Length: 155
Image (tube, one colour):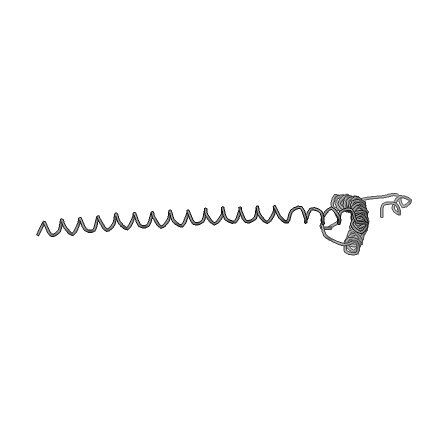
């Protein structure tokens, strides 16, 4: 019985070894095929470039020296300059907006980034009305006594 088990074990080991060698051989063949394919592609692209490159280069130079190309390049430069000028102006406007926003927030106006001018104006009106109401309440309660000549400046 032991001899039969030993023979079975040996057969399994031999089969496993053959399987691993076969797998390694297949992997190696696939890798060689990929490398061969890449080499063939490289050779083919080199041959195409060898024959077509001078012709294409001459056509590109002809296009580059044409009046239409030069005019397009000039227009592109003008557009770029215009965009740069507009970007600078926009940056100044954004800086003004942020400065105004911060100063209003510091004064107590409830404005948030992203609000447009109308929304900000509404918040300023609410803030003014609230300040006027608080001022009148304080004046009514005699918490603050103010000279009537100065009262119009403080509202």
